[in-house]
Each structure stands twice: as structure tokens, then as C-alpha cells.
Image 1: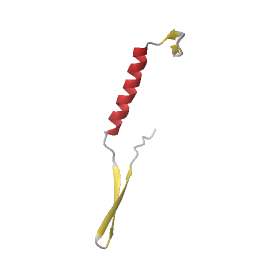
Image 2 (image 1 turned 120 degrees about the horizontal axis):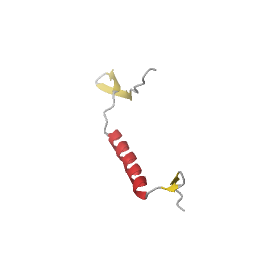
Image 3 (image 1 turned 135 degrees about the vertical axis):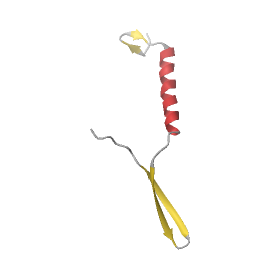
Image 4 (image 1 turned 60 degrees about the vertical axis):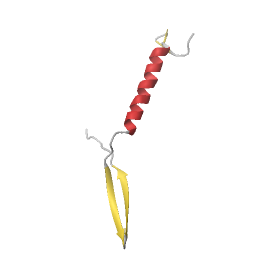
Length: 61
């Protein structure tokens, strides 16, 4: 009997493979999504440095 079961029925390896590939695809797409960042510039004499942080969007209920 297969270790991967759903409702006592063996799950097809094709279905498992599709799930894995789907998750992998969504994670790769997330790498290329644009991020909104907040940039802070600091000028000290002739040099300018900066820091940035990613802004998380939170929806209010």
C-alpha cells in the first residue's frame, strides 16, 4: 500500500508531481514580483548612503 493516501485511495504520482510543480512555479514567480520599498538617503559630506526596507501590505478587516 502506498504511504500517500487520500480517503484510503492511493494518490497518483502524476497528481503529486503536478502539485509539486505548481508550488515550485508559484514560488519562482514570487521571486520576480515587484516589491514596494521605502528608501532613506543619508548625506555625509561628499558621500551619500542609503538604506531601504520592504513595505508589507496588510489589509484591514
